[in-house]
Length: 103
Image (cartoon, rainbow, N blue to C red; front, side):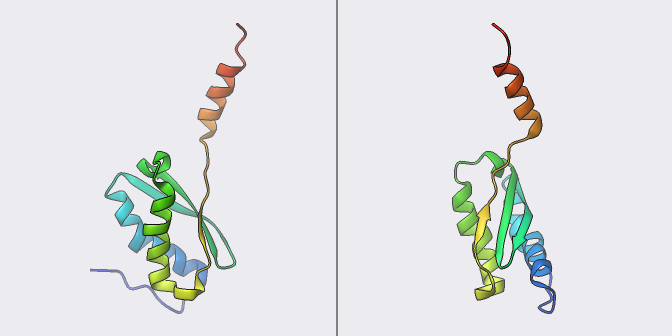
């Protein structure tokens, strides 16, 4: 049974509920996950993690799964959905250490 999403909620609350109850379960089935990182006006920035974080088809997933799911509920109230690519700080520190090693 699908969770009911209140239409009287603020735009940000609705986006987060739709992602949590409608979009996220599809990604979890494939070992991936996502979070809403920022909302600017009608535009939504997301971050993938798990299997989705390194997936070469991430942009297609944004368009075909995330944006489609949000647009189904929000219609024209939704602007664009964009992917925020982040690199793990621990990984960056390790790479810097390797690159700065004296030979």
